[in-house]
Length: 250
Ligand code: G3P
Ligand code: MG
Image 1 (spheres, rainbow, N blue to C red):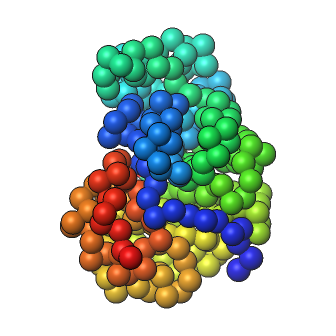
Image 2 (image 1 turned 60 degrees about the vertical axis):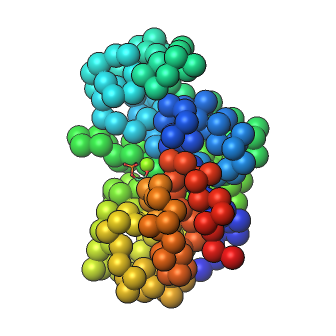
């Protein structure tokens, strides 16, 4: 498959360096960069007015000083939220990042991104893909981006918009399904992203032996993860990648 040549590092910071900064913020990406981590995983969704923003949950309660559904906010309302102080006083005044701002920062820092198209319940996967995908493809070169999703419709729409030579697509699984092979072939997938706690060696080896990159999320215990590297894991997505230093396969 003519995929882009992606120099994927073995460690990717989950939602930015989310162990040390508020997840999915510009600060979390700057923190990853400062820690020497060159790739981040981030979630993208649309506000109610169609603006793509970097956010994980369906609502804003957990990670801001506000309440309510993301889908009910326009950009002005989203910008009024403080999305930093829930994590710590140092981050007081942090604002929700738009996708455009985040891509500009990643480009400026010469980092790479695994952008997860996050389709929460009731949201429209097509609108998300049609807004977010052109933005990421315009902002970053193919070697610096990997787009993933749990949502089949989002993945299929993304593949319809861009071929495998320009867009690396990752299929996200909680447990890697029995028909993973069919799904990945149909999508011309580049990678399989699996919850490492639900992954067993035989399925992991099937994936890597079939030529797909295997990314494991969200691993924060390098000792427990150590045997899994033998499966041919390409990268670990971790809240705190620095804890893996000294525990990487040689
Ligand atoms: O992309 C890996 C991981 O982020 C998927 O789960 O819920 O943290 O977005 P979640
Ligand atoms: Mg995610």
